[in-house]
Length: 220
Image 1 (tube, helix red, strand yellow):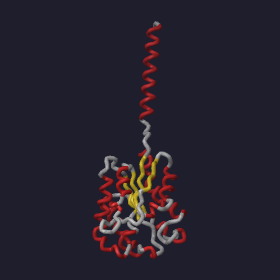
Image 2 (cartoon, one colour):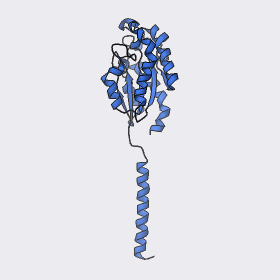
Image 3 (cartoon, rainbow, N blue to C red):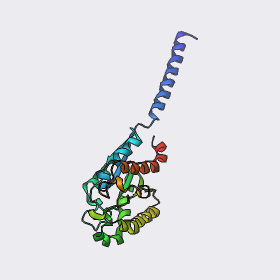
Image 4 (cartoon, rainbow, N blue to C red):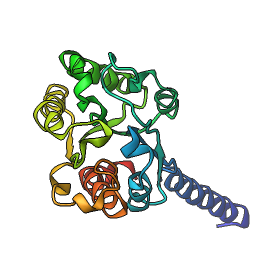
């Protein structure tokens, strides 16, 4: 084989090697998975989103879109869907959406909105399902209410709100995360009977993480 032929062979081999390395490099997903935490003050003002971010790691961008006092019900004075953070959550174009609402729908004065609660919740879900990213959506049962002095009532939460959230999860075929049962014996780990302290927030984050970790492989 003459020198020119040898260099041709070497050149072709180099091109093939570089092409293979380039194909391998670009086959590795490099985008960060966007996770939107949607909820009320239990999302906005606690450590749960930060804890979840720590568990998921650097390949995930977890954003807190909680709005204190917000509700599922569109008939209340503060529906989540009417808040700026809802618009920001949509603009975030999430790959995963974790929705934990319902505590503020458990006010005795807001029971007139229960007739449309499921419909309103499904409208909220549909807003995220309409995104081009087709995000994976998780519905979360809110923590127990240990003290009714702030307004929400645990009896209403247990008897009315939680069954409706379960109904919505069933009708939409979406995964349901139970953050209520694991916290039933943790009254001392809540600041005011509604908002979790660090330990309770970590338990909440654990439940959400456990629910979505089986999907992690598909995002990496």
